Length: 497
Image (cartoon, rainbow, N blue to C red; front, side, top):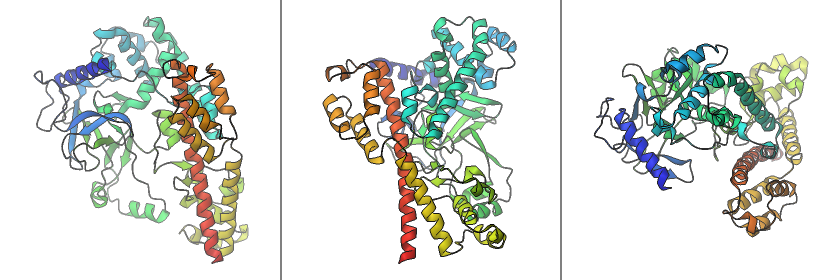
C-alpha cells in the first residue's frame, strides 16, 4: 500500500515536469517546481463503488470546463517510442504487423527497459492484471452461460493468441527477456492498449495518456430509440462535417445541434493548435464528486471484452434474441438493430420487424408506412408478437443452467467469500451447485481453513474475480429478458382491460 502511494506520487511529480496540468492558468511548458500535476481541479481518489481509483473534483467544476491538459511529448505512441533506432529498424522488418500489434510490442519494449524508460513512473502505475475476456479461462468462460458471450470470449482469446504468434519474431529480433516473450505478458500489454488508449488523429492504434487514463468510465445517455427521433436529429443537422472526438470514435455532428441539446458529445481530444491532449468536464461536478470520462457507446459485453468491467446500470446495454429467418427477410432493418433494450423494451426496429413478420405477406406493402412510423397494426397483430416475445424470452431463461434468483444468491455469497461457512451456507440454497463445486475442486479448496484470504492462492482469487464478472453479466442478461416478459405481460393485460 505504501509502495503504491509512492509510485503515485512519483507519477504526479514526473507528470508535472512534463507539463501535464489540471490548471487552465498553467501553460504546457515543464513546471519543475511543482510536486504534482494535480490539485487545481482534480485529485486522485478512491471510489469503491464506481471504478476504484479515479479522479475527483477538488472544487466545483462547470460542464464543458477544461480539467486536464497532457502535452504530446508525454504521450506514448508508436511514433514516440520508435524514436529508439533499434526498435525502429526492427519494426521496419515486420511490415505485416498491424499498428496495434506494434504498439503492444512498443509497450513491452519500454517495460523491458525498466528504470531507463522515459515513461518509467507511468509504467509503474499501470494495473498488474486485467479482467478482459481474452484472459478468461475455460471455467470463467463457461460461467457466462450465454452462447453469444461464450463465443465472444473464444474469439477474443483466439485473436490474442494469433496476434502474439505473429509478433513473436519481432520480439525475438529485439531480444526480449524470456518473461516478455510469454503469452501472459502479451495479453497483459494488449489489455493495457485495449483498455487505456485514447484516439489520436495520426495513428489508429491510439496513444497511452499518462494521468489522462486515470478517469473512470461514464456511459453516454440513451440513444434515440425511435425512427422519428433519428429523423429529427438528421433533419436538424445542417453541417454534418464537424468532427468531434468521443473516446476512440469520430462522431459527425453539427455544433449548433450540440448546443440545442445541451449535451457535449466529446470529453477530450488531441488539439493540434496547442499540441496537447485536452479533457473537458462532461457534466457539472461538485467538490468531492468523481470526474468521469466517456470512452464511447458500449454494451456490457463489449465493456468486458475491451476494458474488463461492466456497469450495474448501462443505458447502452442490449440483448439479442434468436429470431425466425423470415423476421429478417420481412423488413430492411439490420440485424444489429433488432434487440431488447437494457430496460426490457424491444427496440423500435425489433417491434417494426415483428409487426411486419406477423402480417400476411400479401398485405405487408399496404401497411409498411404504418410500421415504419411506429404504429400498431391491429390488436391481433400486437397480441401475437407480444405472446411470441414473451414465450421466446421465457424459453431462453429456462434453458440457462441457473435462474436469476440463484445468480443473485451466488453474487451475495461471493461478496462474503472471505467467510467460507457463509459462502457455502448461501450457495447450499441453490438447486444447481455444480458450478460452485467445480470452482472449489479446481483450486483444491476443501474446507473453511483453505478458503481464507491468507491461504487462497492468487490464481484462485483472480479466477473468482473473473467468475464474479461473468455472474454479474449473465444476471444482467437475465434481468433484461425478465423485464421484457413483464413489458409484454403489461401490453397484453392492456388489451384485456
